[in-house]
Each structure stands twice: as structure tokens, then as C-alpha cells.
Image (tube, rainbow, N blue to C red; front, side):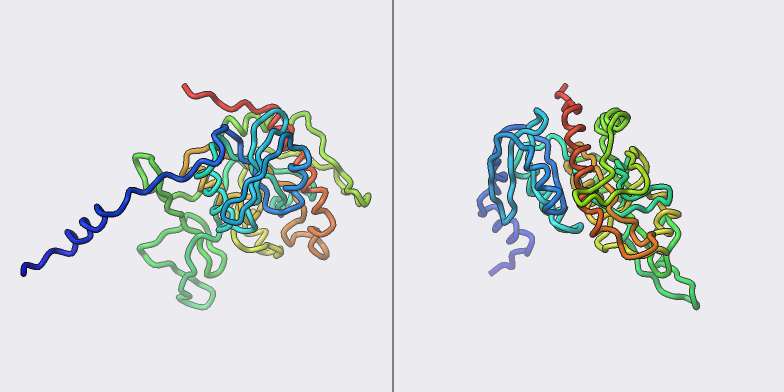
Length: 309
């Protein structure tokens, strides 16, 4: 009996399998995805949602409706990078998403920023994507020759590029930065010019410095909660970062791979270890979430989804 090559057997088996069906679209209406990482942020957006309709998918709750006249779908990303990537792709697979807006809190990295400020970064990087290098002599570290990093290291930690596959001709690509959509950023700039942020929370805990909106600059994301002054300084010096969080760069990567416009509004609830005492997130979480949600509403009111040519 002749021996059939393994590749021929695999091809025959694959040919016999039914074709993969596309993901079921749960709602045909084109919508902007408005994503939050934490329940309080999400609740603020749901409270102003008109004509809400709830759909459950793989344990994730999606709520469709209208905010400021725009058709949206609201959902929680879950905390950290993998959860954010999974839920964003789930939404893209099952809803007609023509833009992604992330709303939430973050830690301040730029020493010129204060708690309560809102940052709308122009680009995002996954700073914990990289290499844990070999120590070649006391205090000195070197990465293998077949790997690269364009940034100074923090001890044994070197940030590396992430490989991204998409329908683009040059796919897969190796990228450090994921830019937000220029049109969305332009709208955010216009809105920020005349937007007033809250300075006190519901318990009348007030900020010592009036909060402001910063549009542009760099954001960094990783799967670790940051509360360390020295590493905060490293992020500021190395990446010229304004803000650090645990989700935005992951969502930006998914948006880039799917070629969907993306922007993130991040309100500073703490200083990522740069404050004088205990981390401030517990005190100013509600205020930061309220400011971010309010700015997102103003953005949605002003933003016009581009029409297809």
C-alpha cells in the first residue's frame, strides 16, 4: 500500500470539514463602542443611555442604545490587557462597530499633571511587552542579538515591539506605538478647549489644583498596577508618558488590527506612586470616573462618524 504524504492527508481532512461560518452579528446598526474597565465608569454611561437593550455573549454584557444622539454599544472590558483585547474583539465580531472609545481612570506619569486631569493620548505603547535580559556583569544586562529594543532598559527589563497581523499588505508588522484616530483626536481637541471638569467628589473631597484636559502625547499600558515612584519616573523619562493604565494599548492594538478608529479618555485617579502618601485612587476614583464619562459624552455629541467614500 503506498504511503500517502502527511500534507496530502491533512489537506483531505480539511477539505472534508464544513466551511467556517462568519460570526453572528447580533445587531446590524452601526455603532460606536464605548468601553470601560470598571463597573462605576460603566454605570455612569448606562445612566444616560436612551432606549437601552441588553445582550449577553460569552459572559459579557453588551448594552446598546443612544448617548448624545449617537448609536452606541456599552460594555466592560474587564481589568488588564488580555481581558480588554478579548472583549474588544468579541464586540467587533458581533456588532457593527465603526469607532471605539475607551473611558476610564488611570495613573498620572507626567510630573506636570495632577489627580483629576484627563489625558487623551495621541498614541499608546505596551511597555511590558519585551525581554527579561541576562545579567552580564553586576548591574549590566544584555538582550540576545536576535532581539531588539529601541528604549533604555529598567534593570533586566527591555521593552520590545509587538507583532500585529492584519489585512494590510505589509502584515505582519512589528510595532511599538499604536496611534489613535486623527479625526477623533481633532474632535477631542475641539471639545477640550471649552470643557470644564469637576473639582470635588460627592463627599466634597476637592482637588487642590483645578483639573484640566490634556490632548496628545503618549500613554503606556501594561498588565501591572503601578504604584512605584522610581518606575513612574522611568516611564516618564523613557516614553515621555503622560499616563499609565492596564488596558488602552491592548484595545488600541485590536483596533489597529481591525482598522477601526480608536481613542481613549483617561482621567487621573492617582499618581502611580508619585504621591506623598497612600495611593490616592480610593479617594478620587469616583471623581476621575465622573470626569472621564462627562468628557466622553461631550465628545460623542461633537463627533461625526466619517462616511464611506
